[in-house]
Figure: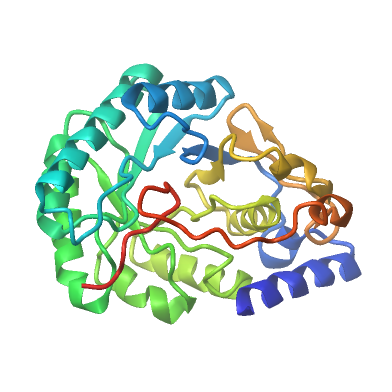
Length: 308
């Protein structure tokens, strides 16, 4: 709720002052932001070929980076079983197929959604050493008790030529503190929907800068949260690429009014209209009322349990 309230206040303040949000928080830069595509729920055929075809479509659309969620049916509890081992091998095949399809120049990332245990995560890092993975994201559940293990995973990933990323669910600078100051991740991924809004996102980014940790926002979100993410990244002058869901719903572009960030030549433009410059189209959204859809382990949206 705090994040939503903060975003609303920033939007209203910008409208009142006739200035875009990124002018309120930073140096007023309206530069373009690098973009990468999350290709997940749009992959209907969850085979190596299906992933490769969907990711190739994202590259053809102009994205210079691709992230996939290669696990569908494993949790930390099942990771060490025969079924978990088979799923790990399938994840590697999916990633290899995507790399072969998109070529060596496009950044490739993998999000594990906390589905592995530490030994299997180590195995996965070894198996991906020749794929030229930019980063491995959220390989194991995050908790204070696992800080040492995650730090070990980071060292191992770095030795194998890839970064380790995570922390998408952190709330506030205090929540991000152990991830950043203890050196758990190369890339911290605050989400403006969760972290407390603009002020806390800014504080997390400043803390990360002091500890030489990169900041790339978690943002497989709807159009309003995406617009807020673009605004804060522009305000802070962040260099890492900004995430966007790819081909998941036509409503991403049709359920809003105003000026949304545009995707041009692999980058997002930053709107300069007052405030956010964007609002939900209530006529469209009213035709799609909320309905609860329980997740199952085989849903690519499912995130593995963070418990023991």
